[in-house]
Amino acid sequence: MSQGILLFIEQRDGVLNRTSFEAMVAAQSIAESTGEKLSAIVVGKAIAAVASDVASRKLERVYTVEDDKLAEYTPDGYVEALKQTIEKLDPRFVILSHTYQVRDFAPKLAAALGKTFVTDCVGFRVEDGDVVFTRQIFQGKISTDVRVNGNPPIFASFQAGAYRADKAESAESPAEITALDVNMSGVEIRAQSEPKFQEAKQAVDLSQAPLIVAVGRGIKSQENIEMVQKLAEAMGAEIAASRPICDNEWLPMDRQIGSSGQTVSPKLYLAVGISGAIQHVVGMKNSQTIVAINKDAEAPIFDIADYGIVGDLFDIVPALTAEINKVKGSS
Amino acid sequence: MNIVVCLKQVPKKDSILRIAAAQKWIDDRDISYEMSEADAYALEEALRQKEKHGGEVIVISLGPERVRQSIKEALAKGADRAIHLHDSIFDSAVDAAAVARLLAAALKDEKYDLIFTGLQSDDYGFAQVGLILAETLGLASATIVMEVQPQEGSVRVKRELESGWFQWVKLPMPALLTIQSGINQLRYATLKGIMAAKKKEIREVKAADVGLTADDLKPAQVIERAYLPEKTKRTEFIEGKPAEAAAKLIEKLRFDARVI
Image (tube, rainbow over all chains, first blue to last red; front, top):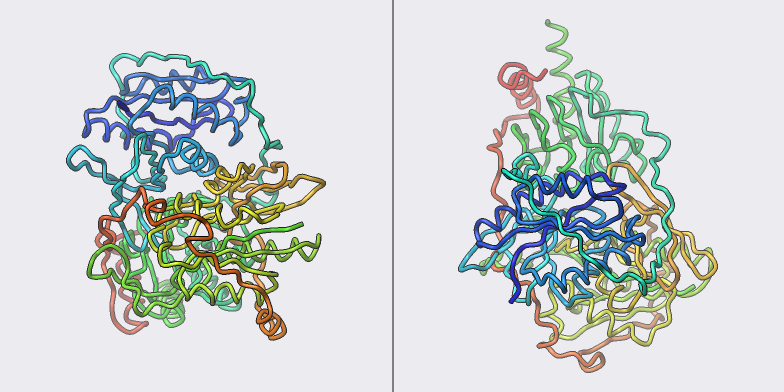
């Protein structure tokens, strides 16, 4: 009978991805609520340091799978190695963090095993021994509780930021590390990867800005950006944007906040016409004070805002600029 | 070079979403629909590749009668023909695996070099259908693609990684790519395109054509309850006319939050 929880640990070039510890918090919590034992698995080449880091946490065992064909991440290599491992270990749950790498291989892995995969979860609850997962739909506007009817293992990935990595429990004594053999000899790696790179123009480091005024789709057209720029100038803030604005080249790419852009936590984050899609929110939700201006009172950005104004940004933004200038003039 | 584009129709982006009385899904009575955003970019990329390298763009979509509207839009923009998976039995195909199984069955006799999907849909956001389809069809795949360069027998793609990093990956064709929003600039359909679309083929595929029953499509994941998210913060809403609200907000930021 399938038992236990297997946590996938993501690493690249021997460096652990911190979101794996966020998923570990979810996995530790599922282990506690279900009575299942938690193990972790690290896949790659030269991964001893990552494995021993993971083994210092509260779990039963850390499995390692090493092979030359796993030195570099490829979907083919990871799917095959993990497929063999999961068939051998027969866990009840496989837990992952919902990273770009996991998104690239895990749906194939689950499909290759004929199992179901609940992606991008933000929470869970245990009911009669079953785990019911919470995931958001419509880009965070609606939550759902999802029940799984499929056979184990059930795959589930957790959204970045859904759990806090520093809450991962440590162990009194390190967990045992067990190397597992996989047979990769017949595996054809179809993808040839080139070295990763950053686009040259990463000129602006928004992570150091104490005040940020960010603009989103609600601004409607390029001409209107200037209005928000004036507000930012009046406040002495950096201007930033959600992805659609940068995709349209209304502001340069290095002004983008979110999963594919920069992550910031300024003293003040003023979001103008930003609905709060999760891809944006992960990049700014740790800001000290969040203000949202949006015409839709139900926009998800208000779920994380400290102050909100529901209304037409084309009226409110100039009023804010005028008010700031007035306050500055009088002080 | 022939490219299949998987299109999903979803509620319009600015729709006001309410939960239906049964609390399993949104109340869809007053909802208008559109092509899911990333799928629209996938279609645009396919059309651009066709314009450069020749071949055919085939769109495939699953859903009720209303989906035809998005299919026609794709044909008007320049897709050559379409496949519409249209059968009430398909209504139960609501998880990613069931959708992928239907797409795979409908594409069985098609010849293609590339399959494009959006990186995820704007409604369920599974980010899985494309990859399960690739696994089912035995195709190499790459996700979150920002540039596509076909070469002799292979395709070189720029994948987006996290935090502003990218990577080029080369795959043998046929391959499946999930396309990131913003990879290109979307076009509008022209009047000429709209007229030309009227003559283009839309092949209807029924349950019998793919040999699948409602039982085969039973979802392994079921939404037990849909609800509005619980707030993590208590938002203080500031009301009044623009100038009034602005003054109140600035005062709060200066003297309560003390951030400016």
